[in-house]
Image (cartoon, rainbow, N blue to C red):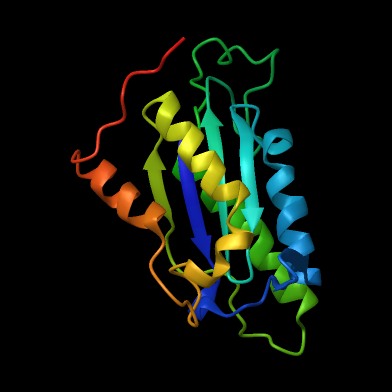
Length: 183
């Protein structure tokens, strides 16, 4: 399981805005949301967990398991080489690259007045979800992200520091280990 964050180029609030504690998606935000939801249909190795589209970024949890990516050429079943052919197992990078490429191309086509416009900034943030306690905390963060926009590090007008960011940094450094899961 991976906790990922993808940011809009230059962190422009292109995907919508927050009104009365709720995210109001723009046309671009709705397109991004639809494409995100379609990831499992494109890659049978990926499942989605909680996610949220924010004004200038997306947070989500992706679960990768054995499966195939729905792009490229696979050998024909009747091909003599099919038995020896190795089918590529997708990485998180493959999934994110495909998602960003698809949405960026759609964005450019639909923004004909801005032919040089870019949707995503380069790269993305990823964090491996190591245990159930971390998963619970990350899910809560994602589910409440709209209500915490005033503290979000991607918000240029934020009014404070989000305690989640401090926890995640210390957790990644191994300074704040999660207690073992309780059945």
